[in-house]
Image (cartoon, rainbow, N blue to C red; front, side):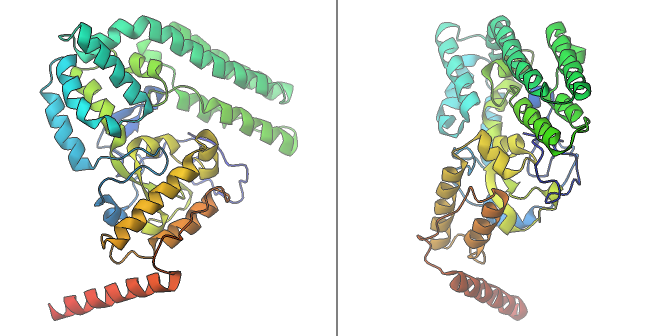
Length: 371
């Protein structure tokens, strides 16, 4: 999720590319394998209050992953019920009502819990994960090595000095993965940020090769993309941590279309209502790169805007009638034209939408003055 843009002039490096970006909408911080840990400390805070009208909407599907999202209050209620669950059978019973909100990896883990509950209903969720651990860690290491092998192959197109530097970094990663020490775990973000330290030696061609190998390194497995990474990460956590981890990526958050770290504005026209899982997965990755990882995003964004249009037609986003046009423009810009929203179902023209917004604020101003 930390993919550097090819055109450095267009995207100022306020933060290093592939560096973690956090905001006040996302209650999760990336640790090993970039998994979600609840925390109230943030490294980077963005004022997203302009997105509050979006956060009030219900039943909206994530514009990146297409899964229906939960509100923060919904998740709080679910977590309270999960806190009372003592074993896999009880947890599955609670989670079964929310399968349509689960993202791909979480749904796969949930299905494994369903099967476990039929055989060992009194086992805890961590005990289930521990029973799968030995097989999962072997598979995870193979997944990681496959990506590292590809990175090494791509690096052969670099100058000998830089190719050696890349091999040194991937070799160290392999050592850490094989040692499997708790105090020295393999962190994808450390590799990706270390690759950013390598300076191209032979002009634009070498720069492109570096970008290519970094793009491949992004596919290192995380607990959000790999069942095996999930199992390895959470096998030693508590019953409550594991249960809550299944639903937390599905909470609706405010996502910057143009990342705030890259001078994206904190205005509703630069916001999408996106799941915490997708929000964290993208981080500050350029949107056109994120689409390369998830080619269905343009269709998912079209589905999203159709839902938003329906909400506006029902009067649920008063004062924000220009939102579809603003998002249409911003998505087209940030995706390099890969996302072109069709607004033919929207009953307001651009001028009519502006008039609706103006009328709303004039009416609100008069009401406040009278009050």
